[in-house]
Image 1 (cartoon, helix red, strand yellow):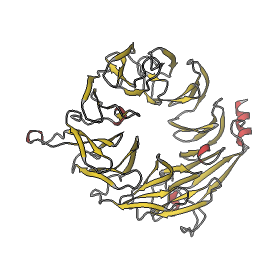
Image 2 (cartoon, one colour):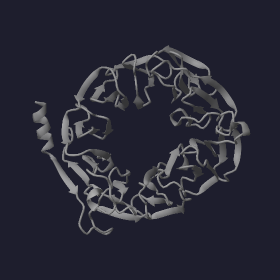
Image 3 (cartoon, helix red, strand yellow):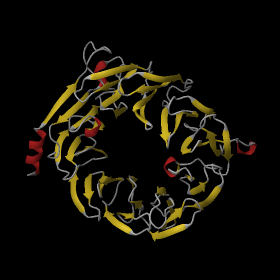
Image 4 (spheres, one colour):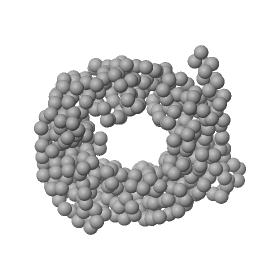
Length: 469
């Protein structure tokens, strides 16, 4: 029955394949994509790196190219593409030589600036980062804060020759202050140890308002750091288990804690919104075999639950998870710590958890399952080698080692499959209009700029009906 339904649904799909042209030029309608190319979607367009290594292009839902912007020679390093959340119709393109701010609809260059050359050509290129209305350019051995609107530098840049590949971590923004963790001053006795400091810079003048060595003794882990949405609290955490909450306006430490998660578990520093009886935001942190919700402002423990081998997830959080002991993930009410659901998961392997309406989606190396709000499994699909997925309006694209499968979002029944090569999903449905997705095919042999056949091909798959919608 399932196989018959899959064949019937697959018959609704038409494929528009854009293959390399013998005499392709930047003005041709044919759009090619470099293998594993970066891509973003905005304004109903898919924006991706051009195969000539000198620019980016945008295509619409029909596969026609709408614009092409020259970025200069990429010299073997993939450009990185990022949307600016403050203005979704803008995209930042970063190459080894320059950073450009483009209008995502027209491709017009709004701002651009040259970047200092990267000494090591084998090192990865620069990336544009944004957290809470604060932006930064992170390059190998160089880090600087920039304006999200113009890419102009804010304050000094930090370098670390011969050190870590990224000498800076953007934390976020609090009012007029931008916070980051950067290398601190070395001492003669610590020639081989680089201390770090948290700094706060004025977003307009770039002047350092405060700096704290106490907050940056150990390099922070990005998933364990952040600034609260109201700008009144911030925290830095490390994989070694240290966590410090502080006032982002002054740098004053509000409280500190040391996490010692049990074997097989990881530290937590997940922000949960305040509501109900305790309107103040808090952090979920580890304390041995317990998980506690600490108020961000003063560290007061509002609830504690025993969770020796589980990663406790609030109802508002998503992300990768790895449970090695209990085989379950407990979803709790962030206000009271009361268990909302317990999801029984496969015995091993990295899992990924995401919201699905009032319930949850969980993937693991062999498949995908959907749970309702109470934690009851209501649908599943076995997909050997599944390692990632992208959720669209009515369908989910699941990528495996040798195939990509499109399944209905609710029933998880297969709709369409690509099995002739390895594919990476770069957009799905809503990004290019309902019932569309785009994938980039990896070349079967190494990429060679002198051989157009190794560029791969971009496929836009148009579904007249997805999941009966």
